[in-house]
Image (spheres, helix red, strand yellow):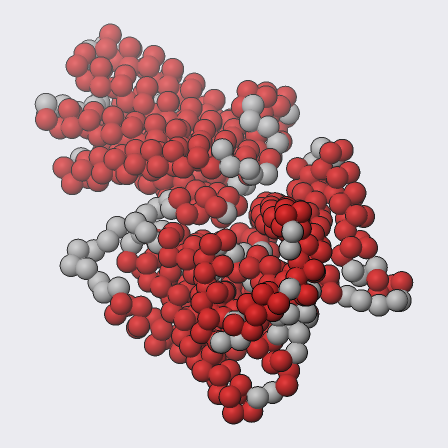
Length: 584
């Protein structure tokens, strides 16, 4: 190989790895919602978990990425170790899809229709269509489709370039001797392990092996041990990702390594016995691109067949290797490992935001309850909930900002922006809950009480606030426009209630039915409760914004009020329901 052939090899390898990366990322964005639904079907059923891992890896074209994702799931408490084992086994099979795609380069025939299946024939068309989609389409989904096609074309062009640059090596004795040396199974496994550990992708290393196979010097006897070693080398990524994770996450990464090491040890032993006892002629034949794809798939399927019934023993093994500590470990709500798969990271953010929303609404209802029946224990619960929502806001805000810097689809970007806006409103709701508790504590410590009429009015207002909390929470959790559309009319009724109750309080002061000191507390209560309804309005407005594909709250509320008849009907309904007129 001369200098120029080496440069072609280097360029082809670069294009191959770049194309694989671009295609994988675009596939991930394009299949974002489908990927979330696939991961939502994870169960303790071994077959279901295995198929989920297979499908996810086939979509994102990387078993390493899937395994890193699994480590993140386990570290976040989203997945048990048993579920992780099943998914990792499926990922090992799913990663073989790439080798089958690359094997198309080995098609050879004089038939025009068969020749059209050869990548060198259809890759220019794929690249041209991808370029049109990427440059001239405005839709993000179509742009991602274009990137998938361009990434695939780049990958295949890199494969062809690598194959062409090494084709001359078939006549080089040193190259032939190198692969004769790799016929030693142990050396072959070692070579495959080192190569894959360096580039951190078994799919890519199998592709490189397929490119070298065009020289005709790579026999099946040398290729099969290299393939076995590639499965071990791909574990490096997961092992690195487990650094700093909790024990269960480390066990998940160790499952990946143990699965491949045990599978390789068993089937390498079988391979050596077959080779030395039977000496099949096929092991001396030159490996084809299709043959390498078949060997890669068969090996991974055999490993899974071997280890799936032994998943319980595999779990016990890694639990012994990574024993439980004396102190219980905390679960990480948002794991940065998931940022490598933005659709999944965003789904996790939504789950944590849902926990935050429930926590904030519960704390506000407890704060309202404290006004009628104050206890120190209830006050402490409200304060703990407020601290928890503060924690949620901190981690979600930081995580969503990091996520927004990634290349994500427009819909995911809007969802991230919506969550960033909404978490602030939920955090403020919990702050107002603490304010209610402080007012209740002041009334209790000073042995004061509100008048009977004030308590009746307060129960009307808190009833309206409780309902608007439920509506906004349902709208957010279910992304439901029905409850979201009911919030703004109710919020307007609460605004009017606040003014009515303020006026009624002034009249009671004039009639000396209420003390000035209690009046200050009353004013604070009205302000806190009214502001809670404002935050609920913001939350519902964000839900409506997302439906319209914008984040302009004022525009959404204006459009809602322009539908005067529907808005007026809802407003009148709530005004009648929450009246403070004296009872007959």
